[in-house]
Length: 294
Image 1 (cartoon, rainbow, N blue to C red):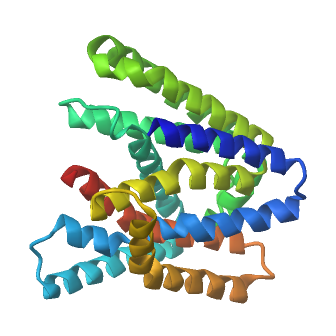
Image 2 (cartoon, helix red, strand yellow; image 1 turned 180 degrees about the horizontal axis):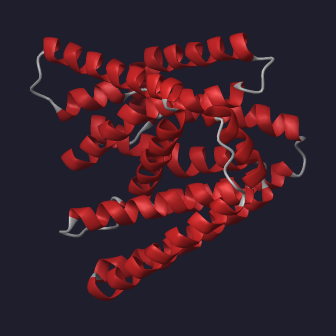
């Protein structure tokens, strides 16, 4: 989507420009609004996607799928309560693959699916650890609040260097063996540079919101609308929104309940990301199936 990429770059740097006018509090508020709107909405249509992937399923089978979906969310939430360090690790891995898949799915076509899987995960994890490295102290506090484990600050940069090393090796391999790869590699490197600037200049939530909305959520919604309705148009967006509305509202109510109960406690940020993680696990599986069907 070259035209959309141009828009995303302009929107990102517009966000950086606004960053100089917004206070930290306003960045936090607007960042959360963006995440709760487009960010949550892009994952609220999973059941419609499942129905489209399994087009021959009867109504009772769809109810079973809904039940499985709820069970996965509950397992994720329970895991955060019982073994938070493991749940957080899985969340980072799942999210890393999810971000990388969105970025590379159409561009990287190879027969060795496991290599494609590793490459997409490396790319997505690099994005996450760029955020962690540029906001290491704040991320350290959030991890401590979730897991009660204090991760040494140097860990984030060390892991980022390791990820970049493996990513570079695989990129060299693909560059000389896959002709199509050459057309996109330097463009994706440029995007990583853009992400680095965003994360470096912005606060944690504002930088994450700019990436999450303009580089992940909106492109994902475009792919989903095209998958569900055949093409992207305003009318099809309205159909998409109508289909996702009930699940979007339920998610917002869950987050609102968390805020009402824990608004005076520092642990709200940790619980907020834990909630996002719980609904991310099944969403990643659904998107993998969608891209597989495409």
